View 1 (tube, rainbow, N blue to C red):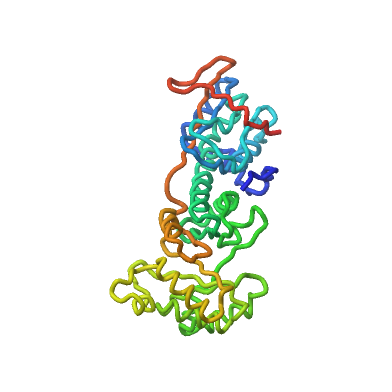
View 2 (cartoon, rainbow, N blue to C red):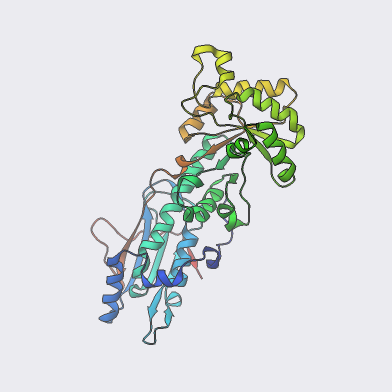
Length: 363
């Protein structure tokens, strides 16, 4: 997916501006540094340079720029906030840009006392969102063009949903599960007929799917989980028979320690547990045999990028992958260094100014 042509407006992020300005979310030593510079009336003109160490996608840069735009500056004697944004020269790559190890992705030039307190916050934005982007991009590539649904909302704190969802969207995920995750680009969360709804319909997947389609079928693609009774083949066919063209897809979600009973009946004691290519094949064959070639198969339940690759290598008849906590794992840390002070090189040993002609001035 190409990087967006336009940066997100700072207001999109709904930053807790007063608390960020006060250093509430910053490492204490950065707050102390800012205060010391102000008390001693030191205003060093610096170049701050930001990089990371992976082949990755740049995420969180618009959020980081919003932090700098809205929260750089100092408190005046009367307590009012004097913005420092107009005194800084900031250059950055675009959201979703492919980046390489050690490549400079952001530079901030100007009076260091105006933004010393913000390093923790803007680096955190970029670290988190780039991790999500890199993981989703790898999943998209592993899926060979099949759809990836971003389903980790329940595995992390709710406050991270908005930015994580946007990062996943930029990296190529076809859908997210909450409205918060879709909010920055004006989308909506998507989902399936869940186990909980089936349970309160007495364990009747068909009845739950019919009610879901009746109420929401005009607004969403109706997709039903079909593993509630651990007979995914029978249930998939029954739901497809009942809903006909209203059914968009079925979702296989057999637990890692269970063998689907329909698969066991087909393969005997050799039947593997969890959602497998063999189970997907059995469901596909049954749906097709009953005239439901239009029904898509979504697989989920502990999927990792390596597992997606294995399904693709084995040519499993799968149309989409739902991936959860695996897309939150790993690291993609960013580092910020002062490399120039008052026009002279002042990087610590091992670091140096790395100009990047791909950077765009942020105005």
